[in-house]
Structures are given as C-alpha cells and as structure tokens.
Amino acid sequence: MSNANDGHNAGGQEQASLANWRTPPHNRWAFHNVRQIIPVAEIKRDPDAVVALSRTAGSMEGFKLSLPDGSSLDLAGFLEATATDALVAMVGGQIVYEFYDHGTTEHTPHILMSATKAVVGLIVGILQRRGELDVEADASRYMPELAATAYKGASIRQLLDMRTGVTLDEGQLRAYAHATNWEPAAPGEPPRGFRGFFEQLTIPGTPHGGPFRYVSANTDLLGLVIERATDRTFAALASELLWKPIGAEHDAYITVDRDGAPRCTGGLCATTRDFARIGQLMLEHGRAGSGDIVPKEWIADIAAHGDREAWRTGEWGKAFAAIGTDMSYRSGWYIVEGEPKTLFAMGIYGQNLFIEPSNNIVVAKLSSQSAPIDYQAIALTHRAIPEIRRCLLGGVS
Image 1 (tube, one colour):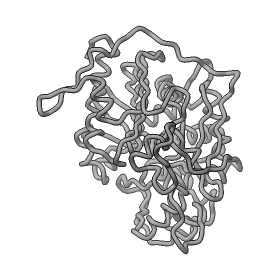
Image 2: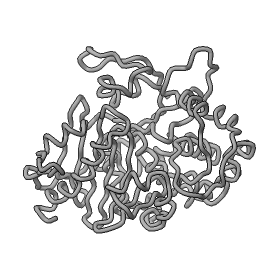
Image 3: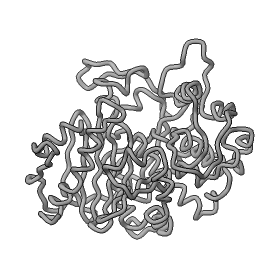
C-alpha cells in the first residue's frame, strides 16, 4: 500500500486534494494521479509475461456523429464534447485507433469509477470456480456480523446484481461517503472505514431480490466478503487471478479506506490498454493466450442471465430507455439486447468499456467530465458506438 498526499497537476497551476479531486478543473489531473491523493493498494502485473497488443490497419477519419438537431460532430468534436482522456478501439484483439489527451498517456493508470464493478464481477467468477466463494450463499456466511444489519439474508448474487433491499437514507449516505476515504473526515466525526460503516447499518431493509436498485455500497461490501472468504487482500487476488494472467502491460491499483479495505465499487485505476484487455477477455470467453482465466460459463451467464424484468421495473429502466429498452445488469455488467448485442461497463464522469461480441469489437473510453452524471455526454457516447463500429469495420454498418 502506498501513502497519499496532496498533488499538483503536471503544470503546477492547480492543486488537487481530497476535498476537490473529483471537481473541475482538478479532476482532469487527479483522475490519472489518484495515488497522490488517496491511499492505494498495488495490483501487480508480471513484467516477464506482458502480452503486447498488436495493431492493424484502419482509420477513423470518416467519423461523423449526426446529432438530433441536424448538426454533426467529427471525431475531434466528439472527443472534446465528452471530455475524453483516452480511447482505445480494437477489432479482433488488435488496436485500430488510440487517443490520449489531458495528461493521460498509454502508461498512466486512470480511475475507472464504477466500471470497477465489472472487473470485480470477473474475479468473483474465478473464485467461485476455485470453490472459495459460493455466489448463491448469503454474504453473512462469510461475514457473520452482517446478520445483525440491513444486509441480513442478502446473497452474494444479489450484491453482484444490485438486487438487495438496502436503501441508504441521507445520514447513512454521508456516513458511507466518509467511510470510502474519498472525502475528508467531517469535523468531530470519528474515523470509520467500511467495516465500521456496515456493522452499524441497522436500518430496516426491504426484501432482497426485487427490482434493480443501484447501491454502490453493495460492491464495497462484496470486497470485504471476498477478503474474508479468501483470507487475502483483494489487490493480491486481482493480481494473481486477473492482472498477471491477462498479460497486463502496467501495474494497476485500487483505492483503500482508512483500514486498508478496497473500494471495490469504483476505486480501480488502470491504463486504457489494460482496460481494453478486460474487454478482449470477455470476447474470448474468459481466455487470454492459452490460459482459461475466467470460466466461460461465467461469461455466458453475464451475457444471457441478467433479469430483464428486474431492470425494466428498477430505478434506471426509464432513464436508460434511450440506450436500450431491453436491458439487464449482471455481475457488474450492463447488457443491451438487440443487434448487435452489447455488453458494457460504466462509471461516473465518463468511464466506459463497450464490447460487441458479434463484431469482435472492444472500445475503452476514459474521461474527466465535469459532472458525475452528464446525460448529454452519456447519450453522445452511446450514439457514437455505431459510428465507431462503422469506421472500424471499414464502412460496414
């Protein structure tokens, strides 16, 4: 684990701190320098087993994103409009297009925000195959103290799929924000990490297993469960089970709370190429090189077994209607049915990983948007994917 301190941007004009690192203009620097602001745990690659990403001929010069008002954006306009820090587009495992800006490079880990959940979901699938975690079991099987909290009776599967009955009120949300270690401690408030937060979470809960309800605390709790079940740190597991086997090019890291517990809901920081490697792993049904890394059955389950009714009746069903009316959420991944079927991971401030299995396409896009949720930027990004596809496939829509 490395210690954090306040940092400055590359030019030294703006100071980023724990109090402002997610707000502009500080986030543009902070999102690829998180370790200088928040304590982190290292996720090591194997420097002797890096699998280089090859390149193939292709061009994005004809990119033209048509807008509802009749105007259009070229590629540079789209990247600027969505505050893009980095973008890697691949076909068949080969890079066709790569872009970096705002101080982010191919060598700098960038925070993935809630796209972290998708990576956590893959690690859970590996642990289940190894017999170290039963996703159908109650989380309290591994953390008995949860039986006295609102998470009593919640299964690991329900944590993965955002289907617990837990809802945090305003006071609990403040306590949770403090526990994440992403904000300064409130005056007079005793320091408390994730474990302390969950142990005092005795608010009443509704029955688990209902409609989709996005509660970020679910995945942070899952991180604690993973560490308790395996008696290992999440960072060590991520290194052994995923980062080294996929031939990652750079080390990654994850933010931790005051006690060293991982922020599994959004604290993973990785380079854009390594993020794209996760997408390619999905395309290859859990294989990388000659290794079977994630069970192919787990990948198939993500693609096929999300509960569409839970999504339709959940809190985001209507809000996401412009993206897709037939969707689901499974193990940290969003699934959009249709042609082509799309799987994607998503995080606030514009972090995205898109996968189109039928076209063998992966698009990793990292950003430093001004607002946590920018509906216009989200719409532009999803609208751009078909145009990126057309360019990548040589004009074939």
